[in-house]
Length: 340
Image (cartoon, rainbow, N blue to C red; front, side, top):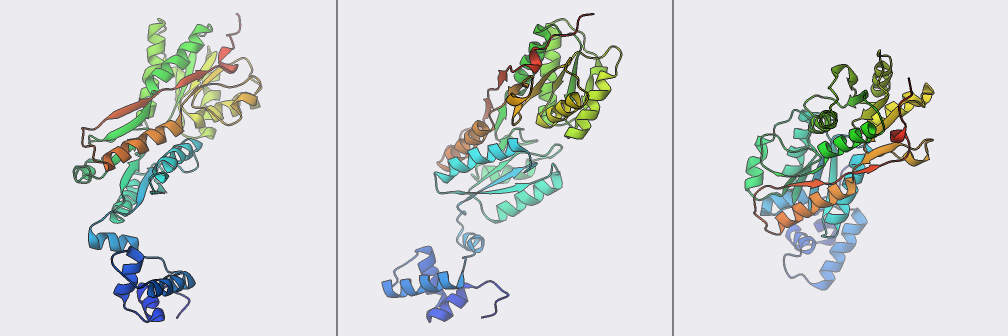
């Protein structure tokens, strides 16, 4: 048999000397086959390294594959990696396999991945949606009973299950923590694009805390950045203002990383910092990094449990679950402003 192509079901049948239908029966457990024949078929399957085309089989008989599709924006972001681990453990306990694809925050790429997963007839679909997308095209899938769960950000144009963090409340608590330590000029480094759900919710929380403390919002204290390098530049621009902020609140882990890099490189130990979402080794910095920490594993687990309940027949209306966040004071958020 040529070595440049994958072995087929016909190759197995010819090697054993049986029909392709008999091989299919053994692999799918569809009907009675003699033990001796079954053993021969499985030996040849192992010898040739044959892998059944599950997608074609599922489409032919109308069943779903034993897989769950997950679309995330960035595989390199530890937050989404931990979300995926929570999902994988939960669905794995039910004998399901997790398939993951990265959209790169591209709506077009997200749609391509969704189409690919749906063609495979997956058992459930989970999406961390790219900003600016429209999910009305998935209405038929949802109505047909496919478990569909959105994570970290809700769907656009579609009533669907979703699991999110307490973004607004967490940002309010982080900003209020800085205010409680004497800060009145607090910079905020936001994510991009402007339509991003988490950016909007956390910015609202920041402004909630200012308003509650009677501090007027100053638009010059808000900066945008989507990666650590841009965040470092944004922090330096904020600190060059006259008068400069005495504290900075960062809206995600990449912005926090950029802020830490800028403040460390410039030996600025006089600027308080609170970040939304935790960072590895945040507790070994001197002073330690104060954060509003999310629970990405709990987000993944909750999303998986929602999908599994749908698989078990739950047909209630779309739900939104909010996973709590927690302020972790370690030092940077407790620095007080320099005295005049």
